[in-house]
Length: 201
Image (cartoon, rainbow, N blue to C red):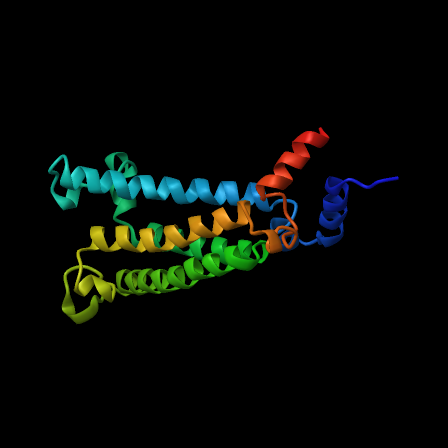
């Protein structure tokens, strides 16, 4: 009796799946976890893009160009806590979901993780100044390292871009792995595994 490749993949998935939350997030729940994580990332991107649109297209002054949420909750957008928590969520998401990647996908995902680690350090510096009410070099607002050279809006658009690009490349290689890497992952994210799952149903 012949065994189908989808049955072999299912058996591999079942044997590779651990019982901890971390193991499940990187195996049977990896696809859904990545979708939720990507939704959070895109929502954050939307805020930055709307803010840039408000400044460059609508001509709003920077102090009132606060994105979508800032229209209703300007105090929230000006809170360093919100920005720090997002940077932390990004860092944790990239770290926790990394185990589910392999090969080229993991390489690109790790690049995004390393860049986000630095971005997180910048936000840690900002929230520390805001908490202690003592800004670097007596500046009127909290300053990150690169903010001494670049305006904050443009700097954080840049940071989000250089984290997002390798992250998307990593997700592409994860969904469409090279032949030699096609069976290394223990999740259902790869396109051919998704098709096999639909055919089984």
